[in-house]
Length: 327
Image 1: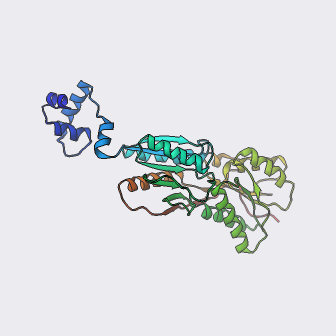
Image 2: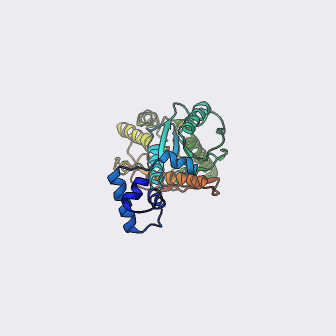
Image 3: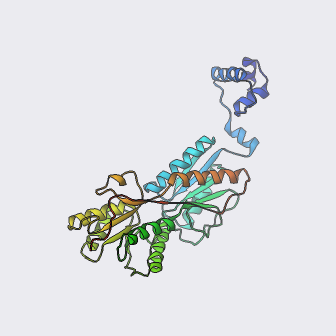
């Protein structure tokens, strides 16, 4: 730093201000300092800066899976906002969503010297009813489960399921069948519960739930069974991938969509508008959830108060896969 100051003809304090991105430096002076840094190959020592400030400008992320569409979209938003704020990310994936694996990942992140942690396991239920982690770091959980001892951010799963179910009932269908995600998923549980509550509130029969595993293959297998039942005229599917498989099975069985069976998915993946027919679905705003989670964490790091629970509204996107019941 002294060498940079000498070459640029400024004080060491001015070099420090430039290195730390402070605004109170004349533009010409800043350019001169940056040129001197470049000529001398000077790079600020982030470790030394962290020792002085107590902050490492690093965020930890714990994820159950990178294969989930929602998880990858949410992570993309987390990474974008973190980078804009000058933070790097350390990502750890866990094999299971057990308390042991999540706590172990948390301990490993502390060893990497992070300022806070985002836990992104919304697609999988933790073995325990509440995450119990070692204290000492700010934490935000991406999930709408209200029992956590940390701030939570998620899409409003229940609202989306209500919108989908009410849409099909309003089209004149006597009831709505449901293809659920895995039983260990909190997101699937919320959608399933809201579907059932909507049917009960409207006073219509509640069919037996079909449980899939989020994949198009499982949707296809369930669709082949439902296609054999002529009373099935409307199906709410817990994600777009399973809906894709279900629609294929209906087509193969000679059940036209939506003339014979209306189908509504959940997620609004980029390809959903190009399914045949284009899929009516519930749009989740994963970008808003990811940015909301990281902004809440950064606020926590700065000692600000953060809302305990933030739900991002979903919206129904009506396309050609749903239509009035043809009697």
